[in-house]
Amino acid sequence: MRGRSKTLLGYTLTALVFSFGCGERPSRELSFPVFAPRSPFPELATQEKASPPGESGSAFERTLNAASPERPPTQQQPPGQNVPLGNGLLGELPSDTEAWTWSADPGLTLVIHRGPAGLDALIWAEAFSPRMMLSPSTEISRFHREVVPEEVEELLDPEALESLFGRGLGRRIAHGTGLDARQAGRLLQLAMTRTAGLGLGFRSAREGSSGSRWIGRNPKGVVVRLARSSGIWGRQRSFPGELARGLARLGQAAPALNPVAEWLSRAGNGEEQPGTLTGGPAYLLIGSATDEHETVGAHLAVLCRQDPQCPVAAELAAFLGSLQVADMTRLQRLQGSSAGNPADLARSAGLQILPTGALPGPETLNAGEPPTAGPQR
Image 1 (cartoon, rainbow, N blue to C red):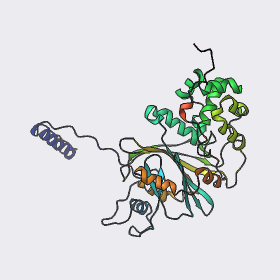
Image 2 (cartoon, one colour; image 1 turned 30 degrees about the vertical axis):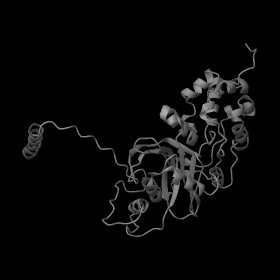
Image 3 (spheres, rainbow, N blue to C red; image 1 turned 180 degrees about the vertical axis):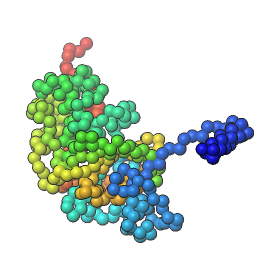
Image 4 (cartoon, rainbow, N blue to C red; image 1 turned 90 degrees about the horizontal axis):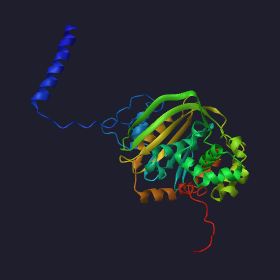
């Protein structure tokens, strides 16, 4: 105890000398947290391994080497695949184009990995909508409703409420489909997502959240925010039965949603698709990636089967470590090299999502009814 007291006293006296002897100093800004790409993956060590001096290769290779203890750090890997993400980011995937397949349109990038047993990992990266600047909580809820609809579909966002009680789409859906106001609001919100409320087939287990949250800058300076949930990943759910009865008249009540109504009448019945996953343990990482000033970014959802562990955890960690800001010219060039469109790639993996251009813009939510012709004055 005496030694410990002397040590504490020494620290205290040192602090006093510096505080009084050096005069006033400007307060030092707190450093922003560092995002360790391996940390969200339970299969990988919790501490990020430092790159050995003189190590060469891309950031993706270095992160992959760090995430795979059995891989010699100096082993050179073939150049990875650059993929566009959101409205200003790109990431790097492994070079194996047979195992790692991606497709992108202006709003969505879908990546799937097929192992020996079939689909075992998926990355869903979606550009922020304009709502992100005006109402981040509404935009984040919309993305969660797209990926894991069961968790948030009962909540009505302010835009949906305004649409219900104003002269927007929600009110017209309620009047034209026979649904009550709350059901009409739920239907409207689900119909405004790329999965139209069917989700990605992941169902969080009770108490499935790890309680862990990660936020920080990755090695490329991109701010990554993620949370992890455990559950079951299998086929997509059916469209909720109490809302499905309104689909027959949805297109007539709200013509802007007619393409969604027609698509749901075919896709929302829960029929198993070719390549559909059989339900098995998995975890979901959900969050976002942005630049330092949050002017560009993307929502992120990463799914991986646990059989019993995620077989590509190291590669997914390397992908998160490779996220970086890129100029639009490069992103458009990458998007032009996309093989097919995300809807076709999703279908090959047993998922059904709305094709590009099927969704109306968010401005239609509260657009008034077409004006009625009246007498001229």
